[in-house]
Length: 459
Image (cartoon, rainbow, N blue to C red; front, side, top):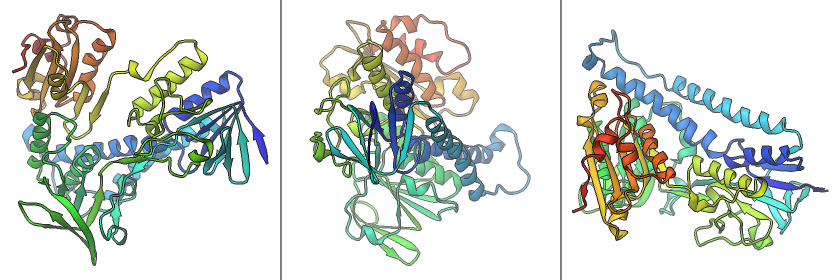
């Protein structure tokens, strides 16, 4: 059975539903395909559920610190992991069901549940049905990468998706991977009460960040009792009854770590390997990401790729911006490009890291004359008042143009504070604009202008 549409969208992640709604509003006949969970990674196994867990873990952490604030909790603090999971599931269900209801109730939009695959340049097969359209949008997202360790398939390992189903407290969680996903889960479960060991093959955590940030994050996690093994590549993992033994290739420390649960958090891969892209002649790079231009067009006319599968950003906010770029270009006569956006993201350990623009290392390598200022959170009144003084702030400025090149805020509210810098960068304004701004006291962001008054040349 063949059915014709004006547009077909594969996937209901962050970009897909908004695009479907917008195209339908333009009186286009739209088909959108979902093979599993409405809402994609963010809603079901990423941002929303993990931040719900972060919040539960923070409550446990603050409760244990009650005496510091003059509060005494009578009786012991008891963790109910089943209720923790129920709360997380309730939040996820609201978003997941909301996306499904939205799409199925959208006029001019037909939802197909099943796996969509290209049959040709302008056709997609879902089950026994062939959908045809002159415009096709690929929004299939990504999934956890499972490294090819010997014996790994015989081990009861978890990825970020599997962690969403855990409703009991791991005795000892072993996390392979010292970047964003691994660090967030490590702190969550340590605060719940698990013993946690992080295994990272590199010499430091979160390699994409500057060394001072990596070291500060390591201190934060170790201060909470998390064991961190650096320069420790995994040789293999073996199931030993109800325990998992991970053998390491390392120079220092034990060459073996044994835990009750194993989380693999070593990166993501795009869901492009089973789409039939070869039948349509759509180009992918050596990592499987769909190759797109500045306006998200693939090499095949009439086909675009959005979100995590195009390699242009691995965040919910960049995926949604992909939708905005497409809508502006196709419907609003408002040319926009991927390169218009400034890289910004957060690491949701507690305290969080907010990051925008260049790192210090990138600024040094740029050849520009760079000014930098830093400020420890111990000198931020709001952090002191909350007894949350871990971390620091850093900002980088071009000495000639006065433009802000990048910034990092590792500390209380860092994921929100960073936006005061980001907005000035988008405005193309000199750093003096925010330096002369009068911010509210007492806040964390009020120290951004103060910090900018202490800029010095990079040494």
